[in-house]
Length: 106
Image (cartoon, one colour):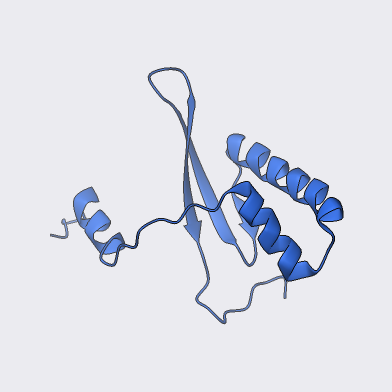
């Protein structure tokens, strides 16, 4: 039900977002590196330090709460929280353009 303010309740938002749920697939770092090497034709020994540095910079930006605009990945907005054990909880909301859309960088 939509409230007077025109907003849906959190459970209704979740129902809309998860109307077509798919099981999550986990891509391990080794598989990710293999995919990048296959897509670029680079040698694994050359690609690995670049991929490691890229992932490290993404992790630092997310941990700092930065919004990332990284086409074609999309625009990632971050919410930072602490859990009960003192660990960081990073909630990431990723908005992607529809397939075939052009980014501002293209």
